[in-house]
Amino acid sequence: SQFLSHLYRELSAAHQFNFVLDYLNRSQPQLHDDLPSHDEAHKTMLSYTFFAPRDSAFLNLWPQDTADPFVIDPSFRHDVLLSHFVRKRLYHDRDLVDGAVLEMADGKRTAKITRDGGKLTNPWVKSKFD
Image 1 (spheres, one colour):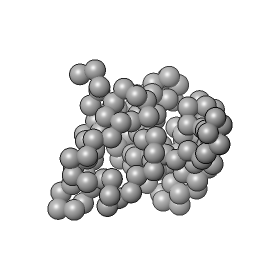
Image 2 (image 1 turned 90 degrees about the horizontal axis):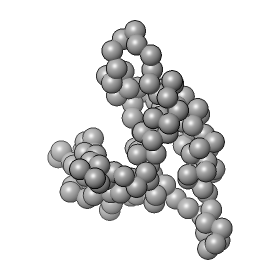
Image 3 (image 1 turned 90 degrees about the vertical axis):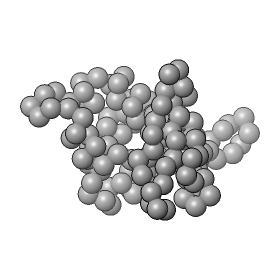
Image 4 (image 1 turned 60 degrees about the vertical axis):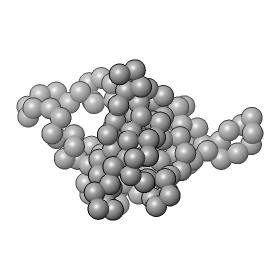
């Protein structure tokens, strides 16, 4: 997918996204199917936004000297990655306003945007079934 290629290039330029790059690479075939570049029926390009977790976010998830769940469980990895995508292009000033609620690409979660003095903080993610 064109979007995934662009995403790899952008994240590779920064040095704080090594884990998510590895996980995206491992899940590429499934993500390619779930996030197509084109809507063939309407002959249009599709856009996405990815909320990229930094390496520190992954390091804080599991104890040291334990197996990486994102490596050993492909289904878990795919579900988590898909929950970080939104199925449209979002614009910082227009779409990411305080209180905005976004539906994530997995169709199971929403994220509520919060801003602290204009700075975007971690979106609060909630299952649609909670």
